[in-house]
Length: 123
Length: 374
Image (cartoon, rainbow over all chains, first blue to last red; front, side, top):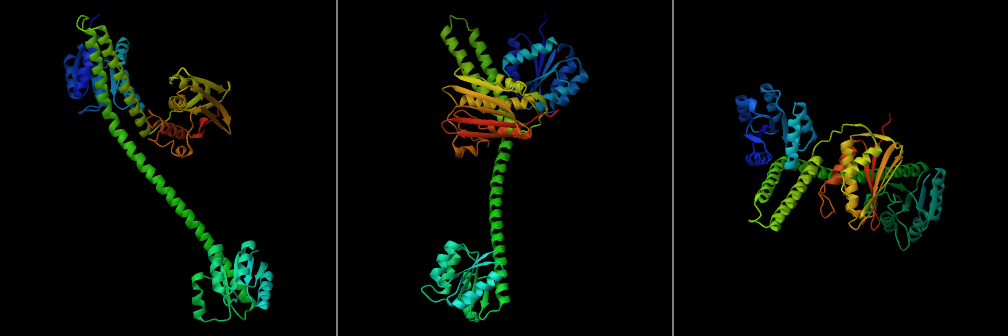
């Protein structure tokens, strides 16, 4: 099976680094973006090569939910997992309403992260 | 009908006054001296005193009146033959409600008595209202202080909550990397014992991070506006679900006493299950040496009452008052938000949480929730 590529979008550098590390350790390719703009650029250039997006709900340049809409305009097929820092149910359901495939609440354990990524890819 | 005490040493005048008073439909007691008046007032509980300013004997009229006023808070009418302002000024300090001037006419006595009774009634009412007003004012200021405190907590929760989760994520991810790193070092370079120690440290570290996360969640739960999504829930299911969320120590036994056909209630299953889980967890934690947690559900006056009873040390009465306020806790490792969130959630459902506790015997927390009447 081909290595799947994951695009991690988070404005926290250390989170990007450590999520990448965890996902790489579990056999994924990882690309990172620190802003919504960066994420969109990567998607436009190489939309075929991204299998899943891990998207922080709070970004400096655009709201996560709005970015989600733009991502779907570029490629509606691409599965997205929203990551949220505020553990409110509303945020989570909001993300799902905007078309996210799943959501994770920070802090998430590496096991859960990888589980949810794999399940979403399998769907 | 009121009881009036007439204090007058001239026997004829005393009898005249008493007769008039009785004609007015009141009762009259007569005292012929100051000392006599004090004794009679003690036994007779009069509502009004009519007293001669120029009383003879050990206690004069003014002295007697002063004692009656101070000791029994009785309204006074003075009887006097002198209608000069010097006399009236002399007795001003006792705040009389009227004067009767000798020789008096029936109508004068009548109007003096009625006016005094009316004034006295008004004064009493005013005092009652002032007291009630002061009580309300105090209650309000306590409530306002509490509201300000809550607002501060909510603001902090919102500000801090989100910003703490990112660093927590970093900590968790870092321990993951450290674990991987240690596991990858081949055995000649590190002993299995050391490797295991490092992994144990990581696990302990992670546990603490998730504990911090729980505190933040509780804080945010408390601060955020709850919007229950209500549906019909079988009480039995609710309790089972709550129990599945709780880790019960081996020395604690759970006894469930729920009618099989118990009613359904209307509420948000997730939120209510968290409330019960919290109360059950507290009950188990109250008994570090073990014991029984008894869960009962009963229909009670159109509501459903779910009680959770422990055999812990109980809660002292002075702590019961503030038990549902945030950041008040007696647990060694408590967030001080659990019960506050419980109460908030239950109130949001139109219910209430009550606590009944006896020091040395244990505590019972009762959640009252509206039944689902479908």
